[in-house]
Amino acid sequence: MILTYAIFVGFFVGISIHKLFGKPYQLPKIKSIELVFIAVLPQIVIFQLNFTRTFFSDRFASLSLIISQLILVVFCFINFKQPAFWFLTAGLILNLIVIVTNGGFMPISPKNVSWLIPNITDTAGLMGKRLGFGKDIVLLENQTKLLLLSDYFRFDFLNQKFMYSIGDVILAIGAFWYMLGLKTELLTMPGLMEKNNV
Amino acid sequence: MNILSKLYQNYIAQDPQGTVRIALFTLTIVLFVIGAGAPESGSGFNG
Image 1: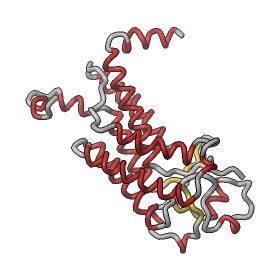
Image 2 (image 1 turned 45 degrees about the vertical axis):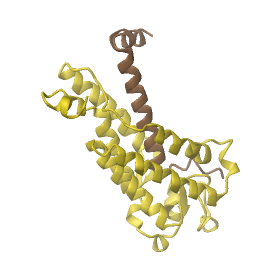
Image 3 (image 1 turned 45 degrees about the horizontal axis):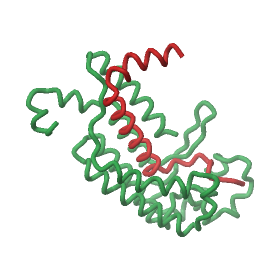
């Protein structure tokens, strides 16, 4: 949710800035967008869609998540010239590191599971298991490697509750920055258009 | 409806190619953050 907010806010702030300067709103070109579709569509089938996500084992899901995020790392490096992608790459790699070091899923502590889903009274039965069909695994804080990079932070605002990681925050900054479309402003500076091959 | 019509006339109709480009790149970023991010809202839990 934090990431969706970043995109929407970035979009509207970007439009406003461009309007203020009398320029058309444009987004910087992204290369190899097919990699994103190849990487993320399987994730949607495995983690998001109610009628498909039950088909996959936890082992398959974790392996798919890691492969998918590795493809996204390649995509990031292809677009690394853009400042927004510095943040997107950093956030992605931080999430990927904590996922890989904790067995293929993002760790979440039992107390945070209870806070997030109050109708779960007995979290002991969830220990070491995947939280439903999502990307998280329930682990005690002292069993979690790189705890501060896990889903450790709470968001609770306007009846929206979720747990997020430092990587998610950095991703949100990158998404917000990209949606501002500020590269357009730079490209309109004389000399830079030719240099950037636009 | 009026707002949508205004939006269409002011932006999309004037630059359909640019609008498609914005839509495509926005969709790419949306998909990217879905794939790269891992915020947990409990929606994956079915009981």
